[in-house]
Image (cartoon, rainbow, N blue to C red; front, top):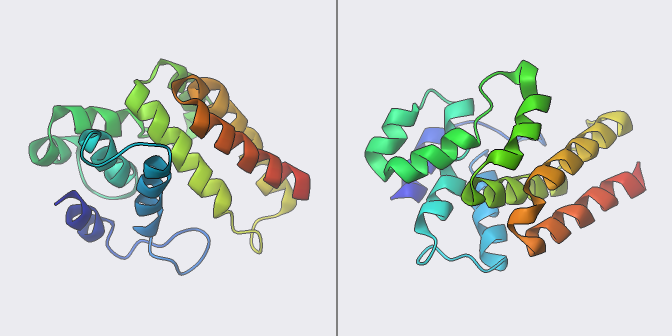
Length: 164
């Protein structure tokens, strides 16, 4: 149900890296989480929140709609992962240290996928470096939640910084 909901609601959004449907990103996050030991059976709310994590930020979906369909916990996690004001992104990254365990692990997986998917052809080396440096803030704020995901994020950061 969450998979279909996300597919429909992300609609025709595309990734920054090109003509790839946006929906692929939250789907890959669930695969990263599965590889780290999470399952849709034991961690259903985490996996649903991972699929829906960008809906409030990038579409016209409200937190209330997510809560009505998937419950208070899923809506709460998605809210934690939503940047309410793009101008305060640094503050958001800093405040992630106060986020729930569930939000932190999704954020780690989110940034792992985003670093893997950096559009190297259209992003300058400086922009790639800045994005990797921003990921270090996420690692600092969220790395305590899951060591395997933290190690993987650190590896992806190093890959970017080594090539730029």
